[in-house]
Length: 408
Image 1: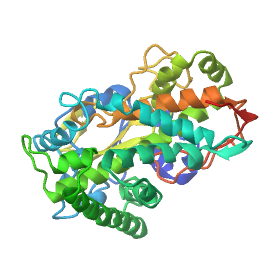
Image 2: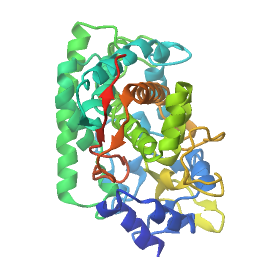
Image 3: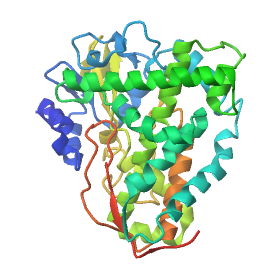
Image 4: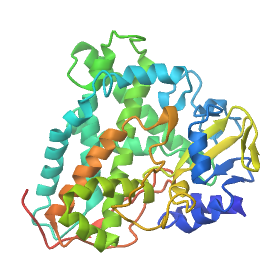
């Protein structure tokens, strides 16, 4: 039964409303699928595995014929730190971290606030005079992709070309009903190759003429462990570009979707803009950008009555865990003043989301400004159309009607 449920979760028909399926999955928090994959859906179980050194993020350690093995890195490539275990993970992540956050640059993310605020206000200004618009194409997408470009020294005019490639490059076959779909694998490989071609040339440009951006700093870093090799720079740059905007597009869109579906919560935020932080945390819990994460067991792991054998593919269902009634009271209720929103949407342990602080910053400013400036916003379509993949779940469009747009 659990195996059938998980296949339903993966099916595109379930994208608008997967929550009843997740609720059924949680009745067996660790469930074995008919292809040998283990799906883990309970909060305590997912939280434990995110921190367990016996679980690996390296798809190359999965059996070639397994669900995770279907998306293993190509031989000879340098995997990103997101797909490495220690000590390699900490070494590569540390080289990137010293150009992004503490201890080397403790105030860097906060220093981006004026730039993000200006971008957001400018995009809302462009909505002046509109009575209906698509939030995704007009707002949720342009903001984070341009922030990601700013971080990496990418010219803003290249954003429209690179953005769609980013979406295709993370469409992992391991989250398809048929993980061996050749068309899906070919599309993903093509997008990854196109991104790699772009960033190889971009890295060389920054070698010759560095800027003040994060990628220039990584290229010219002479600190411990540096310099990164070209494959490491390439992997880190593409990961930061894709990860720096894909999930934030969903976060902004999902937050507005929830607020418009819950007018009493929208009214509270409109009356008190300081509740924007709580609105984003509750969105991350209730409608996370990332639903599923792949892992590989590198040792036998016992969770309750289940033992996951060494070598098994494991899917961590973050979205199911975030609504576990064993952890959260009224877990399906959207409450922007919820006192405890200890969600798992950014992961945990060594792989805690690298850009969590920046994603939160963009989301908080976005919902605060949108809810203050849009007059009588309402959904024109519900449910909206969704992007096809179940792991990075979010609307592909969100049409909103308004009476007016207030000036900044």
